[in-house]
Image (tube, rainbow, N blue to C red):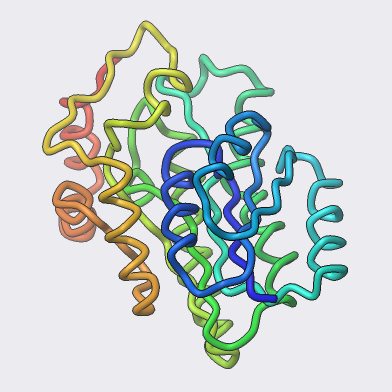
Amino acid sequence: MTVAIIAGASSGLGYEYAKLADQEQIDEIIIIARRSEKLAELASHLRHKVKIMVLDLTASVSFAEIKKYLETSGADVKYLFNCAGFGYLGKSFDMKDEQCERMVNLNSLAAVKLTNTVIPFMSEGARIINVSSCAGLLPLPYLSLYAATKSFLVSYSQSLNFELKSKNITVSAVCPSWIKDTDFILERSGNSRVQQPVLIFPTYKKTVASKSFRKAKKGKVIITPDFISTLIRYAAALLPTWLILKIAGIFTCG
């Protein structure tokens, strides 16, 4: 039974990737998130058989449950989308310890744990898509911890892709710029002392998902699916860090 797994499927890019996976030749789509009502709503729009798993990926027991289902169902995972994550906009030292811990655990550690759980159930030609951010390509004031967790995913994806070459399994890190039509800024950031980033050439989740999925299927490792993220990628490679930080301060300031 060929399957696609989407973690963080209740909203944002995860929601869009689930709809794209629904167009693939697979037998089942496994959607994972904490919000059961959102997963049920998504499932109602998909034509494939859907397995809903209401799980918190910061809890270790979640991965045992996923592994058990993959074993008992005889799954051959064709696609894994690691989309779960969130961020806080503000000064890092204003964040509570539990906020820091949850962000690191969900944005970085959960992706590693889920990937390690799923790889034994993947065969040649499978694809792993990790949702990072262009924030992971450079240091970013007022999103410092979030950017660090996404930088982890970029490095991890590159190295893991190399390690899996013998299995012909590719790993991609998707690094979009700010996506206008998601709840990340409005619901997750919430620090009134820091202004929202200025959105220049805003991107949209449907466009980002479709462009990045096409590139991932072609084996692209680092994917910048929009103009701003591509510009940031090259700027981060060419400009000194002090200048990057100064420019970043123009768009988000304390």
